[in-house]
Amino acid sequence: MNDSLLMMIRALDTALRVGLIAVVSVACGGNVGPEADGSAGGLPVRDWGVEALETIERDLHLPESPLYAEAWHADSTEDVHPSFMWGAGVQLSALAAAAAVEPERYTPGLRSFADALQTYWTVHDGIGGFDVLPGPKPIDRYYDDNVWIVLALTETYEVTGDTKYLEQAEATFRFVMSGEDDLLGGGLYWHEQSKESKNTCTNAPAVVAALRLYHLTEDARYLDTARRIYEWTNLRLQDPADGLFWDNVKLNGDVDQRKYSYNTALMLRANALFHAITHEPEYLAEARRIAESAEAQWVDVENGGISDGGRFAHMLLEAFLALDEQAPDPRWPAIASDALTFVHGEVRDSNGRYASRWNRAQREPLGEFTLLDGASAARAYWVMAGRAAHEEN
Image 1 (cartoon, rainbow, N blue to C red):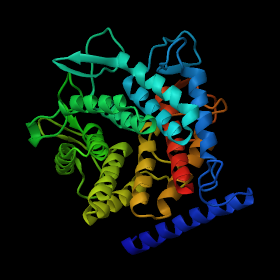
Image 2 (image 1 turned 45 degrees about the vertical axis):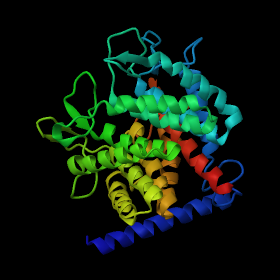
Image 3 (image 1 turned 120 degrees about the vertical axis):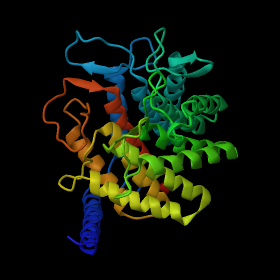
């Protein structure tokens, strides 16, 4: 199939999907676009977000603690412990997105959880950072876990206006950047205690975090850091054939060429942010190139889902919307709407719990439900609801 024909088919598919959303909305008595009830494109994403967070509270909130369990198990004999930092970071980002839309309802819980996460904070070799689990325990810190927290804390600061969260974000980013050295020409490691690889899942969100901190502080050093890490990641971890990103490079130079949607998503988002800050057209062109390849790689044409785990896929939907903010195109919100419709209708079980894959129907009640899977869905819904609320205003 030649490129021009493929582009025509994709354009037609987008038009049909946008038209279908409009038809469904009108049939339900609604209006296409953001609505006062928090829907987006006819989808009640705010209601879905409320529901997702309520399920997390019901199943995973630890008794007498602001923290959440790693997982709920149908087998009550399974060990219950606080969530690993990755899931905690996504939950913090979900609460921040919810509080941005409904501040009175969600800001108190956001503050409580952000403050409780200090139990994960440890100081080792003279620098503080978030451990994978609360202590006391042997040190086990991941640079990518920490950079997700940086992003969530910048949003927590924006919602609350409390400078302590910005200060925490900057302190955490200092830990992230302590994972950079000159081996392989630069770049950030994945794990502090086993510096064996430099991973896109650390470097790509570090670029976004640096740009977010630059936006909030106007400190040019953050912009310089973003440019440096961006250039290294493109050089070492981008597939020149399609613009997507590989998983990691080992210190011997071997590249793990697996592709996960969140790695590409954060570099897509980085290009959108660079364009927003600099207005340089090459960033927008690169964002579009990456987005088109990501659509071809991960959007399931059969059901509209995303062919990856939800813990990765929600970041891709957010990146598509970030591109749409810089260069409006109905295909990107249409993809997000289709994917979230599938997630809510097919990935969520009869008890409101979310399975891990975002392109497979869940026909039976789940026997296990993780904070990471639930928070990923909640984050996606609230990001979409926030977009609708912003357009509404």
